[in-house]
Amino acid sequence: MSNNTPTSADETSLGYEIHPLSGAAVLPGASLSAPLSAEISAAFSASPDGEVAVRSLDLRIPLLEKNDILAERNRGYFLGRGLSALNLVSSPGAGKTTLLERTLDDFALQTRCAVLVGDLETDNDGNRLRRPHVPVAQITTGTVCHLDAGMVARAAQSIDLGGVRILFIENVGNLVCPASFDLGEQVRVVLLSSTEGEDKPLKYPPIFKSAHLVLLTKIDLADALGFKREIAIQNIRRMAPQARIIELSARSGKGLQEWYSFLRGLAPAN
Amino acid sequence: MHELGIMESALGLVQRCAAERNARRVERVVLRIGTLSGVDPDSLRFAFEVVSRGTSAEGADLDIESVPATAYCKGCQEEFTATAADFVLRCPNCSVLCGDVRRGREIELSRLEFT
Image (cartoon, rainbow over the protein chains, first blue to last red):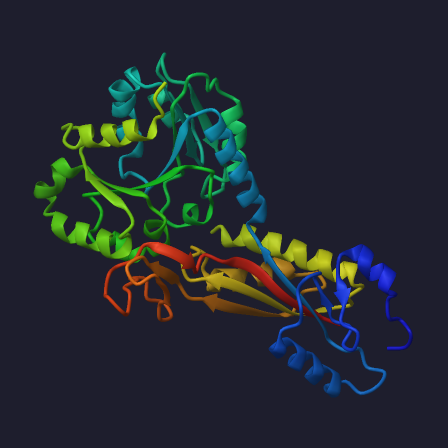
């Protein structure tokens, strides 16, 4: 390596500082950790003169930074408009759309609501949810297995949020990927239906860990299916001790008043 | 399968940083992945092989450092770290289940080595 050491001026313009001995680049304000310094020295001693040494660069960059920044922007936008956004997440078929249909027919008559609904393909759910008193935007993600903050920002701009107090964001049916993507919601709601196993919370820790509220849905079917409610609740409590739990059925109406009163607690008085 | 997208953005960063440093070849990419991040390390490895093909990072070592979950116990006013992949976060002092997760959701490009 002859005389190709970059000048310090070059390095400053790149936003890095150069370790004077090793040539390793570090971000300003960060210093080389002891193990890293040791590693660099080792790399140097392994490289005889004339060999190109291995250089090392400490970065610590969050890979979902873009999404996280957009999510914070959404959160500020929603708060500024005086509305609460809920991100509804579950396996496909756990009853997100059915619960929303019922909620829009009851609760949304008193409190103005809007819905953003995500699916890979079709606008079937958007059509099911459309009501004269409820603005709805369908997001089709194509092959993407989750909603991200950018999709939510675009969809939210496409509808009239005037007077809206509660924004439901129905995520793509998937218990894995949506866990990693903050949409800018105030409340993350995870649905678990009695047609799924009682041990789902133990199988999908990240999504349950991130839940503020867990809805145990289709509870009217529990007995017929031999679904053990107590065990399911125990599993939710173990995995998500931070979450409130509401048992409900959109069909029989059981538990809906508790759900509506939770929503009223979120909607600022107007 | 959001790991592919995550790895694509990681590789984009890697290539940008390597190009800025006039790197010839990327030797090692180090990621920090929390056990509660919802990202699967094996899928990341597979995705890295796919997206690095034909780039300066092809054939580089991919190290994935796992970050265990750390939670905060309100009662004891102390943080505690779970053992490797234990997702039931029970305070070792008072045995209370804790939901205030402080670490373990990281999805980070941590370090690069290049020549």
